Each structure stands twice: as C-alpha cells, then as structure tokens.
Length: 128
Image (cartoon, rainbow, N blue to C red; front, side, top):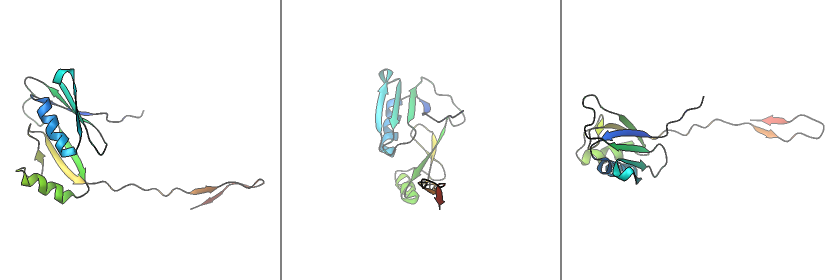
C-alpha cells in the first residue's frame, strides 16, 4: 500500500488569520473553503499544504501539531523569526502550534547505470 500525506490540518479559532500568517512564512497562497470555516495554504516551493479548520474551542493541553520546515539557509531563517520576537529551539505560530526550521534536505542521488542498446546479435551492455 502506498500512502502519502495530502495535508496537515490544525484546529484554530481564526482559520483565515492563521493561514495568512503561514502563507507569509511559506510564500504561499491562501485558499478559502466553506465560507472561511476551512482555509488552506499551498506553499510556493511545493510540498504538503497546511489546512486550518475553524473551531469554537480548540483542544487545550498538549500541542495540536508540530510542523518542520526546510530552509536553504537555516540560520538566516531562524534569525528572521527570532528578530520577529519568536524564540528558538522550537518556534510557535500565533496560535501556539510549534514548528522547527531545519536545513533543506540534500537531494538524494542514486547513481543509475546506463544501459547501451544491444547489438543485433548480443546482450545489452551496462556501464556505471
């Protein structure tokens, strides 16, 4: 079975405001559904969208989610958030959801062998 994450959704009292804040962080686009009861952000760089569902009373207690974001320059991104008054180790969005800024993942490169076309009377040749 193949499964992938389609969206990460958070409960919040003000879906539009929290989505707008995350859109600024991700240079993303905000999309409203159901007359503002559900708002989602599509990040400009691609990846998993974030959803924000308006509820009258979000579940109190333990954090409702934790988002890790990748950055090309992690230190600069953390400094930008610290400059805005957020503390590092784990940052929090305006609604109290925790997130971390991580280094951008290295592209995983697997060397693929080249397969030469077989001669009319012989096997294909594989070269590294």
